[in-house]
Length: 261
Image 1: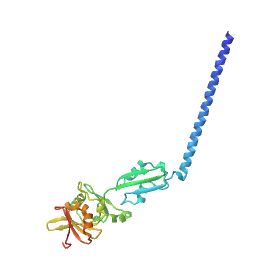
Image 2: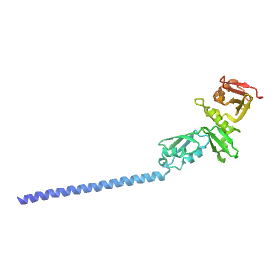
Image 3: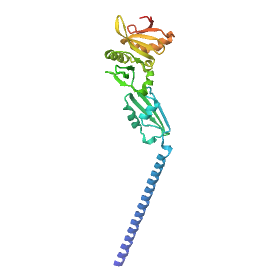
Image 4: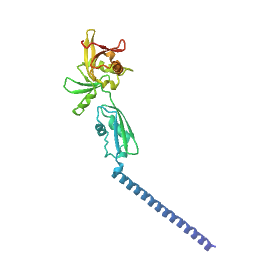
């Protein structure tokens, strides 16, 4: 009887040992498979990042005026050498929105390696030369913000009006007039203005003279500035150039007037 028990015990022990051996072999085999998968994944990733496949294929910038497309890409730290997956959208946005004249940024990426950046720059009313001889762009606000223009951006000032010799109080009034609540002068209208100068008449010492890109000259009080949004419509109706016009806020109209004032 004892011999039978020993035989049975030995048989169970042998099966247990065999089972443990099989488990060990399966674990070793699984560990080898995992190692191969990890190594394979590493080699694939290494090949991807060392090849041109991982690089950006297309870069496009829209909405910029003050900054050039190449400047936007430089500030975003983007080029055709950039590894696509290593430049997430939030990082591009962060790189650009910390710039002085960028209001907001939207970044669009697709799996074909294309990146499109839609930029909204801060509104610029125009540029002016201060008493220190330096050139500044005027950004609306209360108070207004003056941002110095470096040499590389001076060519971009052609897109904005030149602002004449307004004192600080009237410059603020001018900026506010272009940005009245619900009557803000549109940016494309501002781009049609060549120069803005202080002007006076006997009944109003604080008026504005606007010299337009088309050769026309407009006269207005600060209150009449929002009527500029109607200028294109008036221009299409009159079909005239190199004439003078008054912006009459009392009658909400723009009419031709004498240039001898």
